[in-house]
Amino acid sequence: MSEPLVIRRPRLRLALNTLANASAQVVSFIVTLVTLPLLLRAYGAGTYGLFVLATSVVGVVMMFDFGLGVTTTRQIAAAAAIDDERGLAHTLSASISLHMLIGITATLVLALIAAFAGRFFHVTPVQAALLKLMLIWQAAQQLLTWPAKPGNYVLAGHQRYGTIALFSVISAVLSAAAIIFVLVTRRGPLVLTMLNCAIIVVCTGVMFIIALVSLPPSVRRLLRPQLGSAARTLISLGLPLYIVQMAAFLMRQQANRLIIGIVMGAATVGLFEAAAKLASSISQINDLSYSALLPYVTRLYAREEHEQLASTFVTGSRYLSLMLIPGIFVTVLFAPQLIRLWCGPGFELSGTTARLLLASQLFWPITMVGDTIIIGQGQIKRWAPVALCAGIANVVLALILIHPLGIVGVALATLAVDLTEIPLHLRLTLKLARVPLRDWARRAALPNLPALMLTLVLWLAAGSARLIPHTLIGLVAFMFLVLLIAWLLSAALFLRKDIWRFAKRLRSH
Image (cartoon, rainbow, N blue to C red):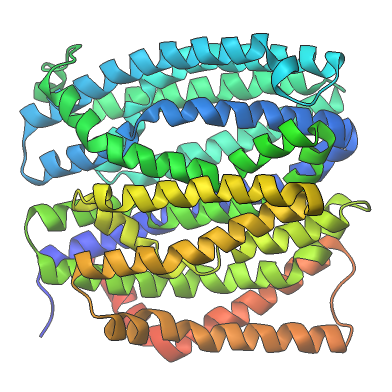
């Protein structure tokens, strides 16, 4: 019996949204792949590390979000599911008002950090002066971009991920153009910071305007500044998520960069960045490849479609893991050669560090759909304490291991904590989704084994036969060939019928 049309269309839209998000991040990854070694060679590890350090400091004030981003998306999706225009307008009004206050606070905090940059970090007086100027420009950007951020959440709540993906591509291309400009004109990192700030302000502002125009006139007429009950609802729902985001910050490369900058200096941050940039690019592809699921899962939960929710968790975990895990594993295997050809000599430790950081992400695609289950059901409070403990453990372990092992110790800390956190995360999401462990393992986890085994065999065979290319373009092409073979194997064994059904539905719409 064929599925009802009401189910087909959301699934088709969900698949297209997921592909749009992932495609945008692939473009961003390619831009990073091309531009990072150019900046390293032009600026040197020390100056480029200072630029990275300034960006990482900005990551601290991004935590002032207080969970409002995901919570706004969730509330807008829930209001749209039941055609509650008044609730949508109140949610958006409260979100804009709260983000304006956050923007003012973020600007003041960054200005304060800029004033004392030379005392916070292990930098020379000249480096401190440059870092201060970059942070001041970043502070000015916060004042302009925070009030416009809710536009992104409106588009996400209405599942307009094609628009979001388009602006992600535009931003990546403009950033690449800015890098080319500073390299050709031999400008320093301050000019690059100014250009990047301008790009972010313009893209965020245009997305905000598009989001407002996309709303019905009746909703726009109800928009007005407010910090009432809708704001309190957003804050109460967002605070547990904020704890999880704080934990994620402590677990991600932003915190690692700050630790290295405080303990070892800007030059070492530059060495770490070669590994961290590769790992964070893969992480962004992972995160955005499933982010389109949140509004869909929220709608299912609001309509009490529990069987469909369980099916979405299992099938989503299956599709995303088969798509992402082979790519992560291929990058883990070839990371040292890739870093060496990408960044040049002197980055041997970066290759080992990249392997550890990438390995920490290897198993997340199997379970990360569970984030949408936790958030979509409003159960983030149950995960927040565990996530916070994991983040604190990462910082403590990194501070312990950085002295004997350097940047490798920092990456090793992240890997150890991630491997401890994943089983706990899986246990909670299986319970919320009402899915037995055996069913999830059989349908989502075990199908990854053939592709992983084939990838390992191909890597070992290529190394033994000395077939691994010695140029960057050749190595990337060879990695993609290995990945393509792994994908084809997975598709032939597990996804053949699903691909046929999806193509048939795509033609019908």
